[in-house]
Length: 99
Image 1: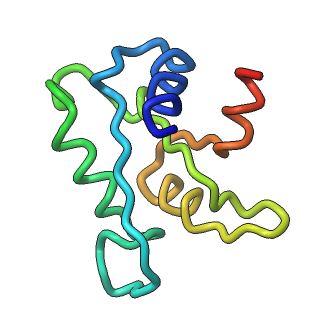
Image 2: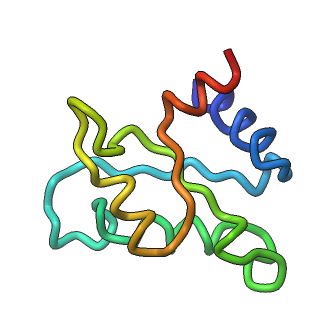
Image 3: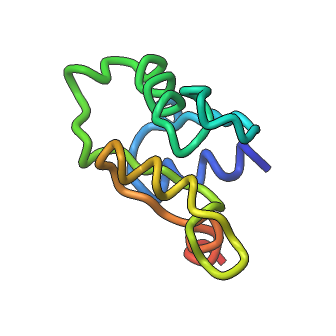
């Protein structure tokens, strides 16, 4: 399933597959910099993308998540994206785009 999502995001953004990263961390310790809505996960992802400093800008980054603040959801994913200033798409919205 993760491969399908990564390929879908790459196609949606029209970027190479290797520039799409799936990085997650569960937990609720808001003191942990890698627990959303903190921005540690995005920092980790940026370090793993080839040539991110020379080729990519914030406009090129998309966070995809399931905590979008919609009915029945938390908002930790979208809040993390807002803190970094990057675009966000809900996972269901992305999947609807491809069905």
